Length: 577
Image (cartoon, rainbow, N blue to C red):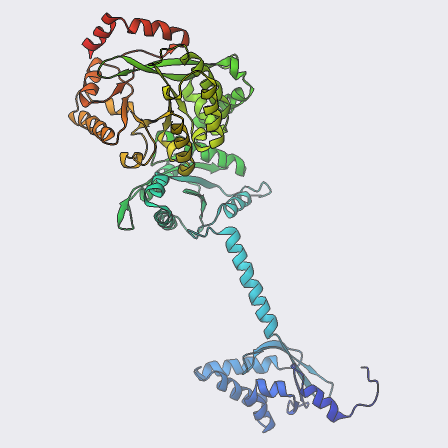
């Protein structure tokens, strides 16, 4: 104790009385000797009762009954016993005062002289702690929860995946990773607007919550992509069947904004530790299985298999081959004619990419083009192919057009588009002789950017054709809003057309709708004279297929054109059709 000079008791008590801290002194029998203003204000019934000579228990009970008038007698008795117990010597506790403030209390015996009770006001500290806790929860929510759907976000999902794949685990538990896409969602956004698209995503998220158990992790990874982690020791067949059932649930109609909307769901699955032991391996394999599902079996779940592993190795080998290839030397083009359906006169040639690798041999475009697109290497291939195609087209008659495919990257990037337009400008080929064929998938990707690119193409005279129409989710209503010149109808519409009357009706309907929208129609995949006659009867403008010519080399095009212009050749084709 430090005391500079004599301090009278009254001055000391007055100073203590002004403290915010609760201060009370009892004699050795726990009778109240002194209580400062903070104590009396905080628990008036207690200290008034003690001052009147009531026992610690009775005075405390009086205070508690006053604070909690609606509590039962038993509850008040239990709370009283607790409060008296923490008022014992050496005990700590937290008590709320009548004023609503919270105090941390401590009672200490002063030898034989009595007991001192002290209560430190924690109210502001508690508020600060509560605010910090609220901010921590909010930060956690912002960092780990997707705001739109309330599911986990990508960051939290990947973090959880890392934890489950931690190689230090002594007994790692098996689980299944699923990556899921909503097929056709972009069309919903484009046609109905983002608010409706957001509502669809929220309902899809609710369906996923209902489909999975509580200890599963469900996340929105971005856009219409979802990730799922499911603890599981089930067989691959059961997992795949269950996941396909979930895809079916997500594929049920959505009643939104007064309309019934449809999307489907595809899922790729990879199991730990069977097909991958790290986050990267699992994500790559599940993503590969998802890609396989979207390409071959939309609306279903595909589990990664040994067959997929072989394809991944093949994919990696092809990607490496493209990266290391001398593309100027190894790439070349074949050409397939497109004919006027009525006159059977050749009007254009489609340029078809080919790759002959010195190490891999002849690689089908069905294999290397998708890999080039996925890896971004297509932007290296396309300028080479277009430059070569333009060089050939310069030798053709002015009446013959050049048709060439563009990837989704070219039509989503103005920079790439301008590079292609410069190549055309540098050639002697009139841009009006050039037709860029674009798939539905490419057109639906980044639709605002695509729209600007297509308008830029058409501004300089380049024509735009929608390739493989009917294989995706677009409709002619959607097509009407795009800057198009032609629609290339997928060959699947010819399946069974010789025997099924409805197939011919569908073809005619498409043709009529194209004509009403001012679009030219092109039928691909014509292989028999009967198909050609039915295509012509339906009113389709142009035809392409093996019936007329398989893809030929650049050197054969001139010979083909010369031969095709012979009167007897034209008459022969017309007779067949």
